[in-house]
Image (cartoon, rainbow, N blue to C red; front, side, top):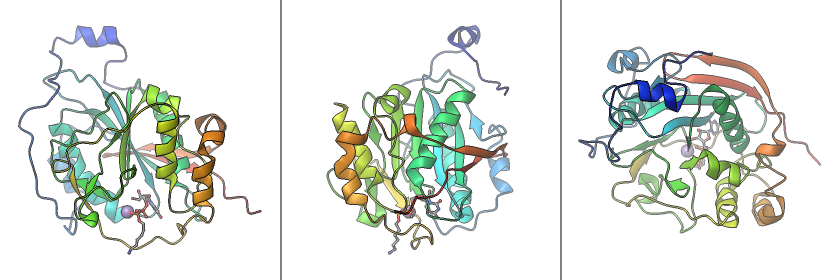
Length: 289
Ligand code: UDH
Ligand code: MN
């Protein structure tokens, strides 16, 4: 695959531009209307610097972080459109060097979001030397550009102030919706568990992995992290996972056997669209006992 980004540190040195500032300039709150009638066609016109595959990088400075945004996906076209409409301008304003990966489960059987996240990570690292991975639900849109979609010294939880929960942290250990890991942090916890078929608690399990690995969770200020979640009902095929609480309890024992190192999948297609890269994947189906 060919990218216009520098492929190594040496290449980057050749580019005669300064490093980007740690806090990009002119960031602030913005209005987000999740019922907006967005046209797919207008988004590229409004984001001329986004390249095929949904990649962009700042023109005036060199970004420290190379970010892969990973979205687990199935049958949420409307949400994806709204997400792209709001997020390309947001990520560019934050001077991100980033690309968007929409990882789509081909099976219409039970959804497995965590497995899709692991596939996104495993495939993205083959494309480019990303050093930051942000795992995003397709229906969460930040309302303040100061909520930096970046990695930090510890794994970071950016969806800690959702309108759905009256802009409060849902519970003290919540760790879902939008989370950022450096490559090292994600490898250290062996990624997500592959065992969560259906909805719920894969994020609690992830939190336990982070704790077991001796890391902490960072969160932005509650006011800056204000985000909207598109109102929706539960998807067919994503019913609550029956054994989810039991699985969370098993984390300590299982995390080094269940995750990136035990992931099995088959890529059906890897396609660069104008605003994102779609990876359609066969992740298998739940084995019923
Ligand atoms: N997702 C899909 N397709 C699906 C299921 C999930 O793309 O069929 C992805 C999508 O990125 C979504 C994420 O997985 O944002 C998380 O799933 P979710 O949005 O269903 O989870 P959430 O916790 O919702 O938001 C739970 C549904 C409960 C709705 C109850 C209404 N009262
Ligand atoms: Mn949701």
